[in-house]
Amino acid sequence: MFVRIANLPALLATFCSGLLSLFAVSAWGETLGEYWDTAEEESKYYRIVEIPMPAGVAIEAGCFEVMPDNQLAIGTRRGDIFLVKGAFDKNPRPTYKRFAHGLDEVMGMSYRDGAFVITQQTEVTRITDENADGRADHFRTLSDKWGFRNYHEFAFGSKPDPEGNVWVALCLSKSYHSDVPFRGWCLKVTPDGKTLPVCSGIRSPCGIGPNEHGVMFYAESQGPWNGSCSLKVLEQGGFMGHPVSFNWYDLAKEMGDKPVVPETRSRLMIERQRVKELVPYAVVFPYIRMGRSISGFMVDQTGGKFGPFENQLFVTDFSLSVVMRATTEKVNGVWQGACYPFREGLATGLLACQFTPRGDLVVGGTNRGWPVRGPREFAIQRLDWTGIVPFEIKTINARSDGFRLTFTKPVDPAVASDPATYSLSTFTHVYQQGYGSPEVDQTKPRVVQATVSEDRLQVDIKVEGLVQGHVHEFDLEPMREPGGGKLVHENAYYTLNEIPRD
Image 1: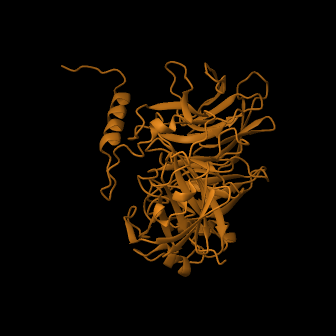
Image 2 (image 1 turned 60 degrees about the vertical axis):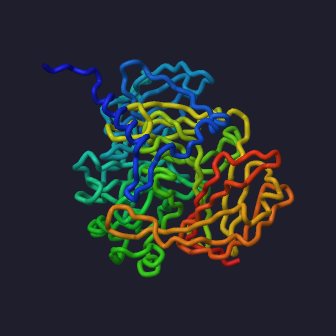
């Protein structure tokens, strides 16, 4: 006898998500458990607001855009574009209208001069409503200069840069190969449809856009030649680390010769000296502790409406259903920076985020049938700042003899000036063809001096044992504000590609 269970895929996905949440173990034996275990404390400062969806409609968000009339546009994995009224209301009861359908994995979208420009798996497309009836009726291909053969050949597109170009990061074929042109590359599509190669060596991107300084970055996932997830800068002529896409240099003569093939089981710091095109991770997200498959990101340019993190990157994660922060800086001509926990407890695998005119952060995505920590198949939610400033590590910046730590609220000077308050450790990854990497070459730097600024918002720490090329992990559990309050998140991670010269 067979019994049909309604919505069995959703049931299985929820079951798998629950297993991941309770028992997920990294390849190196680290248990996920409660993850940061800070959701209750986080909710005092950033509440999660549900943006309801129409009953019976699957909306698996892959990108967002704010329209001129303050509607929310949603591009979906299933190939739709929805226009949503009321998504930004304090207590949203939105209405949805489908503007376009029949597209393929919409993973990038902007609206300019009366037209959508979207990135889908096979092309960048300009979409307009010629007869003004509220539905798309004209679709113009701007570029389809890359190949497509497998469902896992995703394409992620940026919003236009200041010159109007859309940057497209192309996933490898089936995660491990480059079977058709430019898989594993970044291409730049001009407003008139000219397609220009930018760099090679991408593995599995899931997010692309400017950092807080206006320079184009992308989010890379852990895997072959990538020890952990990271943010990387998209340098013209650069090599992002995965050599399987080298075969398409023949189609991009302006890029010159293909780079040297990396040594296997090396270190990125070593290979940077040997392979001049090799671009290091700007910000490493330690596996499991800071995400498992980072995805869409966006800079907070809300003018303080979202709290004390203006001009920082907010980075979503697919597998662990969390939002993190990141900051970047250029030192000795090389990009590097730090990542920080922010908000857990979201409902599904996150693919995209978008700041609203009210200064809230819309997030959304899908589990796509893969195990994610959030229990639902798909969801759209919003993070609203409550107006209360959390006590957090705001930024970390490298200095020639250590680091400068900036906090969101004044610190207790007696605690902050004690070197014992600061626990540091470092590690790096094996740069190798194998999948991911354990954390290796661990060291324990020592903080020998801590100097608190007059306003008590900054502390300069002098460190013995800085290691160039290593991730420096900070544990500030003893840190207190004057009333005795603890940090909401006591850990942060700085990728020290370069030590400042002065």
